[in-house]
Length: 111
Image 1 (cartoon, rainbow, N blue to C red):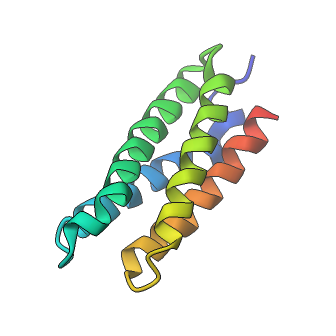
Image 2 (image 1 turned 90 degrees about the horizontal axis):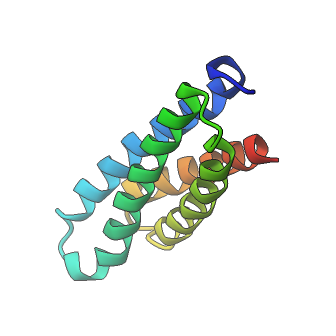
């Protein structure tokens, strides 16, 4: 069974991704056209939630860690793709980058 040390790089990626997603969601609420950012905000919040959950289950050595890593990768990818469309917002570009990295980390853990 895998433990904290075998998951460490993925746990760190998930925690960083969650923090950046929270920052992005918060920043999006301050944009001039908030309605245009609604999907981005929603995905940021979902991504942060699953990343925190994945990090927690991995640190616990849960038998379900691999399953949640697969789901986390999918949500991170969706969030990253949405954020990447908002090229005029630095916070979205930063979020897209970490989301895609986190998705890659989660996929390698679940492989």
